[in-house]
Amino acid sequence: MEANKPKRYLQLIDSKGDLFNAPDDTVIIHACNCLGIWGSGIASEFKKKYPAAYKEHFEYCKVHKENPEELRGTAQLIAPCEDSGGPCHYVGCLFTSTRYGKSKDAPVEILSATEQAMMHLLELVTKSIAEGNNISELRMCLINSGKFGVPFAETSRVLRTIEIQNENMPHKVTAMARAEEEH
Ligand SMILES: Nc1ncnc2c1ncn2[C@@H]1O[C@H](COP(=O)(O)OP(=O)(O)OC[C@H]2O[C@H](OP(=O)(O)O)[C@H](O)[C@@H]2O)[C@@H](O)[C@H]1O
Image (cartoon, rainbow, N blue to C red):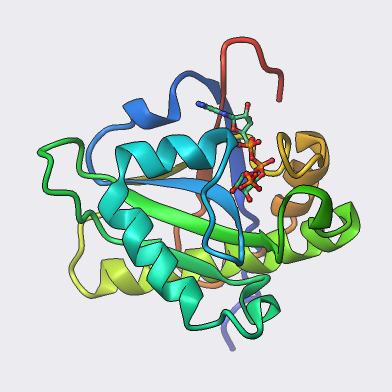
């Protein structure tokens, strides 16, 4: 009988710097609402820098517009699709709250959706690599800690409980804080 392998959990690596300066073939990850709106915070930067990815995201959310909560706790992986000749980044969207602004979900719901959504993203990345895509690493901002109002320490605690399912699944995500932020 095969010896029981020790469980492996997702590692978060704390780092500082600009998320958008990631090397080519990085998945850059942010938290999203399920309405397809990248209206403020870092999401509006994504919209400016990756307009084609935003279009794909908007169309994806439109399909669920009658029941946006269906997307909560899931993820979308958008392959590099900009014509602008900019960096070759994948965009990883974690649907951590159904709505935004005053109607955002409660912190406890956001945290539970974050865990599920990251697991889904790891599965999508694993599948994409298996299909031959060259994904080198995963980086995220301090998700949920701005507009969604959940301290990053809580998000971090939840993400570190994610169990890595197999050898091919990425097991590290770098959390990029801005110069003025702490993890
Ligand atoms: N310009 C910028 N450049 C670089 N880093 C920036 C930045 N602006 C903020 N950050 C950092 O990025 C992290 C997350 O902070 P955010 O507030 O963005 O996001 P969040 O994850 O709490 O919430 C998601 C919802 O916020 C949005 O706005 P709406 O709901 O549409 O209004 C979305 O659409 C979602 O729904 C924090 O580390 C911020 O320091």
